Length: 442
Image (tube, rainbow, N blue to C red; front, side, top):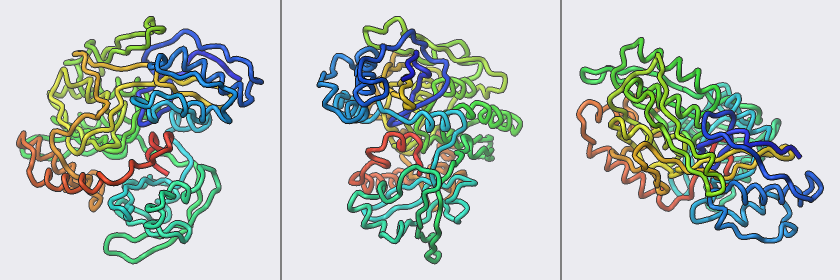
């Protein structure tokens, strides 16, 4: 069993994992107790001891007999502080963690879904170069069957995740789908390493006398820093005077990347000012820290920002919004964000990583409590009938309209309300699978 100081600090999605960071450093981890190193009891005791030392809500933890659990995951689920942590803390594979945060990769078929009705599932993202893209799937397609089983029936029975199978290289499944207005199609896809482009689109639109930059940003991982630098270099070269930051599917990631992005947006107006304050439990107050915005030569120095968000925008995405608001006008277009104003450290053990919630965050004005999400200022739909970065797509069209006029449009709000009413009866995407919640894809 490897035991060392937390490897990284994260502001993650519904659950999380990570790599390097410039957020708070820590001193030591608890020693694993008896249980045969990587035997079940040893792993459960490691989780128990780590939570007792680092967990933000350690005082709320019950203390059941570790010998009564058949896995560390079962122990974590049994003791977590459910009023605030229904899925944030979790245990992940070290290999999957390293692949995602080092290379923006995961094992899968390379697409995301959105349930748009009780029996309807549509494709929201397809990652270029992945098995799904090679098979011809695209945003907006309707999923019909998985290995011959009706998607409608799988949704009704809650068996969709099981039908999509394990995250194993070489696992194959046959998908049936239909493009809007097109014929039904079918293809067999085989899971492999898929790379998620961190910055998937960079555009500049002429927008009623201004130049509106646009970035579609998918995750806060190590490759994101250079990708963001290239994107902001392009926006500056193309004369962008405004920015629409599209975080609609961004579940979070590394604190250091959030700091970098926010500094690129704020520029000299925020350099040296408070980006975020970290607050730990009463055993770890020595780790409390204030992190500042940085000075970036390719920053845009923006006076305002429009962010496109949905309920899948979480953690580091919310951190960027909350940390910039004391210094500029930040308008959220789309829907209320997920709600995660806390972060994790990663503790390695037995080829796994434990990610307990270990700190809370607050901005320069002390604003921190958005467990219910950050509400949208302008409601707008995530329009699956149009591609990402299409200026006619519902949320992007509303963002551009707000930049032109300073007002929300009633039409977008009405369309978003219809979507909200339909989603109200649907389960959360990837419910019950914390890793999938973070990656946001299969």
